[in-house]
Amino acid sequence: MIQEKRILSSIDVGTTKICTIISEKSCSGALSILGHGVVPSIGISKGNVMDEVKTGEAIRSSIAMAERDSSVKIESAHVSITGSHISFENRISILDWVGRNGVITKDDLSQVPSTIANSMNDTGKEIIHALPIAYSLDGEYGIRDPLGMHSNRLEVQSHIVTASPSLTRKLVRSVENAGVKVQSLVLQPLASSASVLTKEEKEHGVALVDIGGGTTDVVVYREGTVCFSSVIPVGGIQFTNDISLTYDTSRSAAEDAKLAYASTEPETVGPEEHVRLNIEGRKTELKIPRHELCQLTKERGQELVRLIKLKLDDAEIGDLTTYKVVMTGGGSILPGLENLIKRMITENVRMGCPNGYIENIPDDLNTPSYSTGLGILIWAASHTVHEEPNSRKNGTGKPMSDSGNAITRVIHKIKGVFQ
Image (cartoon, rainbow, N blue to C red; front, top):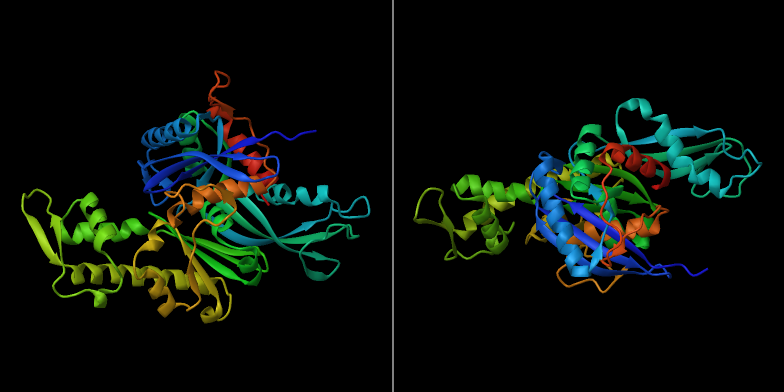
């Protein structure tokens, strides 16, 4: 039986931008980009949807751009999620039903995430991911793959990602109001990890620091699996706000100044360099030393790196100076920020860009800013996700929305397949 090519779509709903990417998965499993659409984000604060109507309109615009670019009409997509409402915990669960046939089967292990999720139904939180870390079998700990072993009692240590039900519903409704079904939700740093980290890094131990517009997401891998994750409600937009508030200029002017002139290394700026900023309500411009602007940026950068270090301390990964840190996300490209991490956390730092897992990535997507959007596609393609059909624009198939059953459908899929 010849396997047909499938359409996989991702929507990265961020604080500063919304990015829709449409790809094609070949029968060999290779992914190639067909089209994409990027628009400014509206109605979102620190990763959380605050205005469903405005966010839905922005998502619709992003989808329309991607559909025009690819000549593909999409009906469903995998969607990113982050925000200060996300919670994490490591949990040990007893699986006394495993191995009833005398041996642990693939079917047994496929049911582990849903079993863990069902055991947490009374917590009042939505389960986004249940990620097995290691298994314990008859007193033997640290088993990574118990497939084929004999036992009727198995324990599993899992990393559980949960979210606020109300904010999750807002995100799902925003997407479905734009005419696209939410096929699954993927935590942003896990998606970014899929596109920028190597298997060797995950095996040896690595911390991914994804600096977005409204949040900085941290995820730590040890021996190939996630052992810690966290969300810091500080991102690139805070640097912009500092400039805007300090100099009484518009946010757009502050953003332009940040991108063009900001750095966390004021000592590298000459005394003769100046920046001109528009002042709210005035026709005249304010002329400020660039050194002063960079000093402001440095102080915010130092605060962010301190928060990152505190999170890594919480991860209990040992000597941070020997651990590897990979930076990604649009905020990571701020000049000097990588050097701050080298001075304050570890010398072993690199910038993470989307790697070769996807073919023909357009140049404008091949940057740290789009690690999440591309990573969602890799994550979805590599997990057992029940894909819903998307169709090319041939007059068949229209985007359908079933918002009444959206949350139930999405959470059911998340519980059952993301492991």
